[in-house]
Image 1 (cartoon, helix red, strand yellow):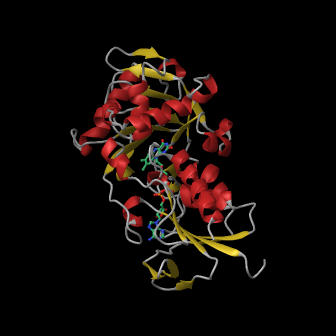
Image 2: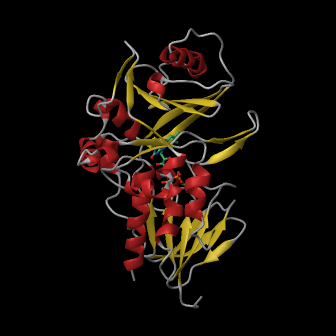
Image 3: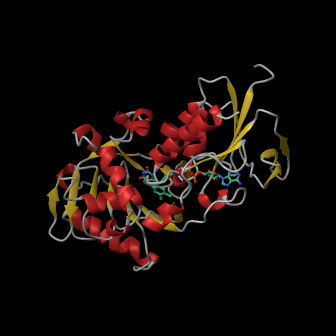
Length: 356
Ligand SMILES: Cc1cc2nc3c(=O)[nH]c(=O)nc-3n(C[C@H](O)[C@H](O)[C@H](O)COP(=O)(O)OP(=O)(O)OC[C@H]3O[C@@H](n4cnc5c(N)ncnc54)[C@H](O)[C@@H]3O)c2cc1C
């Protein structure tokens, strides 16, 4: 590798940080990813759960066919697809996206439909247009997020430094000069570029950005010994009514997702209440509660109402000429999801690549 080659220092090993490496794979550049945790993936990863002795995703992640980048990354044979929406009030099943848009948008934006910014709703409509079947398909991860997405993206980085938490950036006039990781420092060379691929509140530690409120998600995984069948034999259903917005079936697990959890129902009451919902969906009487794992993500995504959307940045530049930002929250008017994280990486890389 030539001595004058530009090094891209990517801070954050989530989907946006790793996608930066992906977009630089064919360019003459060196990519180093620094991640504060001991594993990659940020808000989307798989891990070995000691209690159940299984490989689990931190939370089920779904994507739609209209997610161009994410659809190209996954092998659809290894993900599952659904088209069923169930109204738990009367257990009627519907396949209409339009009639069920409130629950779909809630899943996209982790906010009740009526609270979502009109601009974000418009972006989703445009994304889905033309409303052909392949764009509307909804796929979900099967405890394979790291294997099928994170590791694939990570393979394009030249170097990955885990347990590397950026503590401080030293600036000289309009340029970053030193990255300080506490136990080691990196002196930036003339052409080097830094991409902060961090959450909003983490990014704010290093550059001035508006502070944005967050919305939470609860994910409950039940461990089942028998195969569970949902209405129409579907692997996953969206519930129009009910506590759980989505219910996903995998080999030996059933996972319920509660978007925009607002603590109206106490967390410790959720597992039994939702299990009863799942039994009702299956048309069986609730007999016993299986083992389960409940995960609460208080900062799952930023709020996506009009006020929060206006606080988001309009491009990847910062006041420093060699520092750029990526991350799902950085793309104004877009839903905060994996696809947007990838798009933000593309924008950051193009901006950084063109900058002198
Ligand atoms: C429960 C849950 C369910 C979700 N469901 C879906 C879904 O179904 N579909 C979908 O598309 N999206 C979903 N999302 C959203 C999706 O996970 C995110 O949009 C995406 O993962 C964001 O990636 P990111 O790289 O922008 O941010 P992050 O994943 O937050 O990455 C930031 C990384 O930076 C690291 N970091 C932080 N500070 C430092 C530091 N100082 N130094 C070094 N590293 C640092 C963090 O550890 C982290 O790895 C869900 C999210 C959650 C939490």
